[in-house]
Length: 341
Length: 274
Ligand SMILES: Cc1cc2nc3c(=O)[nH]c(=O)nc-3n(C[C@H](O)[C@H](O)[C@H](O)COP(=O)(O)OP(=O)(O)OC[C@H]3O[C@@H](n4cnc5c(N)ncnc54)[C@H](O)[C@@H]3O)c2cc1C
Ligand SMILES: Nc1ncnc2c1ncn2[C@@H]1O[C@H](COP(=O)(O)O)[C@@H](O)[C@H]1O
Image (cartoon, rainbow over all chains, first blue to last red; front, side):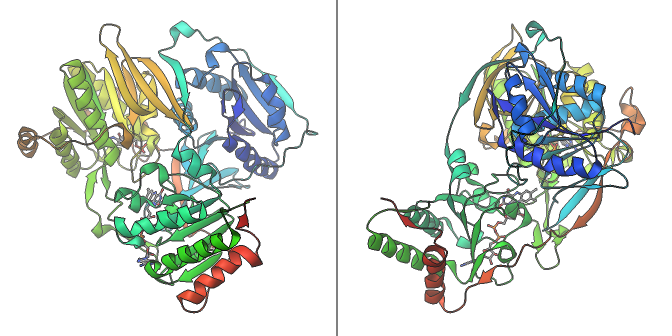
């Protein structure tokens, strides 16, 4: 196992744009690599993407492993995993991180199988046990408000997928230097069993929830679908997007795209209203990095108050209409729209 | 056309209740159900078989003997046959060991009738990893296509299937050669009401049950706890962030304070556009 050294981050790029989570992972990976006193590498696959290497270095990498090939133009499990296997078997990293995006999860699952190693899904905290050189990948555990730390003691590399928007990217620093190591690969399009015929980008609700500055989220505490309309009304009044908990989605009050949390979206708006939301860990991991969190809950012991900047203990049925009224007043006073800057 | 759907029995996390003070979960309150995503996987198999005009749907589960329940549930939705692999040797498996055991069972099933498609759920609501599907595909050396949101065409002559696959901000239109493995989420279809004959069949149905001895070429150290590289190190309550400020007074006062905090004092929130 000693031959495995270094921390690697899979750099996911779509059409030459690096996914945000990859930069966040370079930030998180930098800390792990410094602790372990090993280099941090970004692993970049694609077609005509060499120019991204300097970006990867600017965001913290010491090394970029690069494979550039026309067959790697669009993400596909079979071609990408061939590239990753080639690099991992040759250079043997001890830790290998991927963004928990559809592609990152897909790739990591396939690679872990071929490398016969452990993979922790949807990690939200990363650390290392220096003495044993063990990656401590923690994720919300099934059930309670509890985190479980997953370890992979006897297999290398230690792999994890990490949720977007929970780690922090470093400041871009173009004065940083690093090595670029390019590998050649033999891939034949005709031998591929999957073809990407086209890619359709759709900027729908998910994107608007993900990018919203202000989110008004409601939970099961709203009581029923009709009372949940108050959430929509408040959101409309202040120009916010609507979100909700899984329980609300399962009750059919909101579509799945608007679910915030471990199995929904992870978001970091400036202001997040959590109304009638208990604050289960699976929900909290999706919103806790919001700048201001305002919780309204009638139970003073609800865990949501632990993450809230401002908390109101009270009945949402009473508070929310008053809030709406006050915000409407404010809008009138200011003579027009209210919005976040 | 022979489709095998992997189905898992999971505790109903919707019903499971957590005591927020002790952080313990009340397991008694959680009935075991068919993983909701796997129900959609079975439903999609039913749709595909209808689309091509005939074929067999088998379901495969690994778990304790009670897992026959989720096989029966799958028969209700429209599966023809069910297999359960159940053995102490499989216990304690993480995703790597699970995909190994399931792939060995799939090899055995394919001897009875060659498999064209394997469908898995996007993830299981208990472990919640989504790693088992791609793992099975690698072991069987068939291409995995995860996050499929639509199966639009199947060409039996060319042995190709046309799929939409969800990605970060949109979808890929993919043509895959089959046999291949798909994973599907909830948006792919609506679960239909089970027709009466299915219900009757399900009630009486006895799945095929295999132990580890019924599977061929099994490397035992790759199974169960022994074959699982990951272990749970510790459980802990996440460090609590700075407890915020609770606003005092009656509801009118609370609302007033909040608005002030968000506007004047912090100068954070509302500004006049133009
Ligand atoms: C594997 C797994 C993944 C999960 N993923 C997610 C996820 O992505 N997102 C997610 O949200 N959840 C997720 N969950 C579910 C999560 O554990 C919680 O069950 C869920 O977040 C609770 O939703 P809730 O807060 O709306 O409902 P509840 O927990 O029922 O809370 C309702 C709250 O409303 C309060 N309330 C009641 N009436 C009023 C009133 N009149 N005024 C004010 N307050 C009131 C109550 O005091 C209570 O705190 C997941 C669970 C598991 C096991
Ligand atoms: N024990 C099991 N038996 C049958 N199928 C399983 C089992 N575990 C996982 N699967 C399949 O793999 C999918 C993803 O599971 P997971 O990787 O655990 O999130 C599930 O939706 C099932 O289709």
